[in-house]
Amino acid sequence: MRVALLVIPALLLAGCATTSGPSSTPWLSGLWIGMEEGVEYPLACASGLPIRYLAGGRYEIFEERGTWRLDGDRLTETATEATGAGDEGTPEIGRPYVSRIARDGDGAFVKTYADGAQTRFRRCPE
Image (tube, rainbow, N blue to C red; front, side):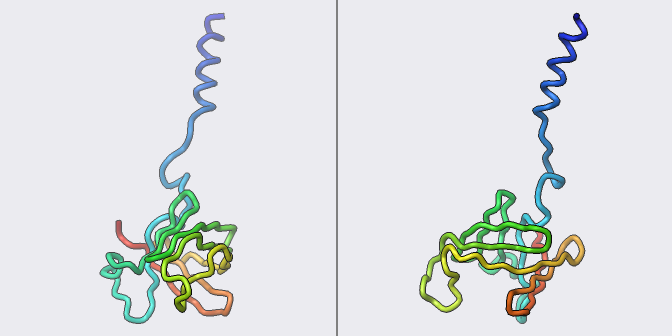
């Protein structure tokens, strides 16, 4: 009986355990910079150019905020807030943008947009 009194609480506590660290965080989470012409790495990481993918499924970039979801290689980003509405390049609020991404080592990925254009991203040092 005594053993059961010790084992049952231990099993209940083990069932409540959660994991933390890299294994529980999606690999895309973090700060990334698009390596377009004229972008100086890592200096551009300190500018408004990088995009931050948060582990909870939100993203932030310059004057835009939204949600993201990664299913396999399919990345869906939906803007929920954007300043400069009506400016060229400002995303349509609520419209999902779907692209394909392919990892290029631990610190890089290539994003292929619907029109076939590609951008290579590198992880910024944090």
